[in-house]
Length: 201
Image (cartoon, rainbow, N blue to C red; front, side, top):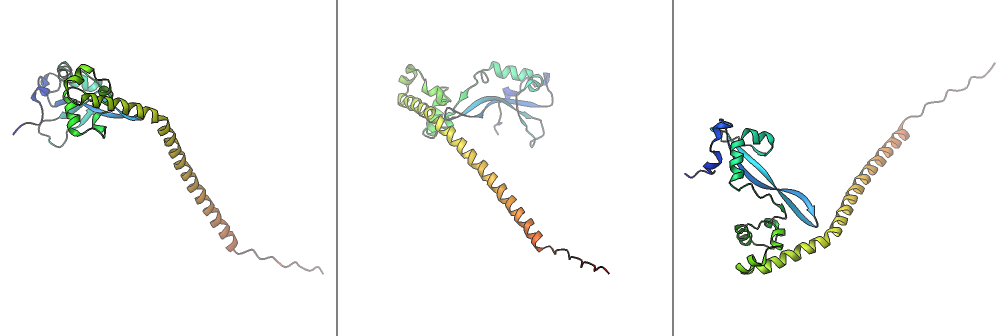
C-alpha cells in the first residue's frame, strides 16, 4: 500500500520533535474582492501527524512556534523550492470559463493565477497552441472586472443598506406591536370606583 505522504517531509524529525511528523504545504486563502475579482493569497500551512493516532491530524497555519518546533523540516521544505513562491491573485480554479484540463495544463507551466496568465510572455505563448487566446481572454476579463468594480461596490452598499433598513423596520414593527398591546391592557383594566361625597350636617 502506497503512503499518502512524502517520506522526505518527515526526515530528520527526531532533532526537533521526536513525537510527531509534519507535512508542510501551500494553501490559497481567500482575502476578498479586489477590482471586481475574488483574490486569494498563498499561506504556508502544516499538518501535524502523531504516530499511532489516525484521528487527530491538526492542520495549522505556520507561525514562529511551528518553525521552532519543526525547524529542520521547515528549512528542508523551503530549500526544496516547494515553499519558495507565494502567490496572490485570482486562482485559475475559480475562473468559470477555463476547463479543468486547461487549469491543469497551465499549472504544469507554473501559471496558477489569472493575473499570471494575462501577462504571460509571448515566447511562452508561442510554444503552446491556443495560449495567445487564453492570455487575451484573461486580460480582457481582468479589465472588464476592474471597470465593473465600482458598480459592484455600489450594489454591495445598496444591498447592505437594504438589509439594515429591513432590520430597522422589523424592530419598529415589534415596538409598535408592543405599544398596541400596552394600550389594549390599559383599556381593559378596571377603573377605580369613586367614593360618594359625604353630606355635611
